Image: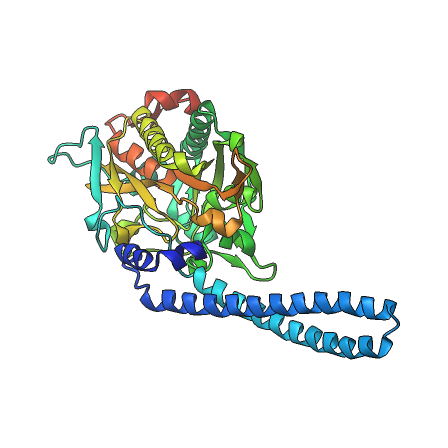
Length: 423
């Protein structure tokens, strides 16, 4: 959530920067400022009321001591009036504040100055690419057919048990999943990330804290009886560990990693883009989360970007890094790098990671703060990244490493799988 004082003091800048995200902010910002004025006016009246009541209380005490009971009783009538007025003013103030907060949570985060203009993914900037793309003449088998051929992932069985987007992993397919999870976690912990095993459901406050609510409410599975939400990513419970927490400056950086199943209702488009493992309702992912000092968050973002690249190199997958344009960024992000791996059979790039800096946006929602060296309390910055999401990594590994004898496992994974080929 944007800080209200920043909106008040930099109104036009906020409107202009939100336009980079193709968010028309003029009306909602005007409403925010109007409610902010009403709220502050109500607070001034309430403060004046309480100040008068306090002064009268002192005066009444002195009158009683002086034996002037009649005069004291007159003033007591006035204090009773002030008390009723204070109740009305307090209720009005709270109502205005509720309306104000409902508007504030609908405003996206401001994009960083380096975010390019654009309305969709086609306007993202390709800032890095490495690895060998298979020759045009090759005709590798798509991963959904490879899964059937080697009986490692059963999409129809998942459809029978649950529905589309819930595959069943079998044999070496299941072992490959487990191997990748352990491989990703071991890489993260070796870089100083503390491993967390979070709940797979969160309450409403946690959803609001990281910005999934109200923005992505329709995309989250909602257990309505208990008002709990299945997590779309481990980012949500892990970051919310620090909700309502005040850190010390010496605590930075706070580094956590977590494996979780992830649940998303959105099905995306139809056709080849959602076939097989391309888009699922339930999938596995390892997440990295950092809480950092505002002065160091962009340096940390670059370090996280390089870390994700290092894992893809170990998996020997061709990949590219995109700087997302304003129109393709998430609601909460200030700057996002997407990682895509090349799918040999589908002849397309598949997103496998987003690494983002949210600056103080999530921290403001969660009241995640720290005390600096002077003892002043400030908002921290939050960052996270997929390191990595499994489905499209598996798709690329299957398609890019297929041979006549089977699917060859990258050397870095063999110690985790216990086998070097799927045949």
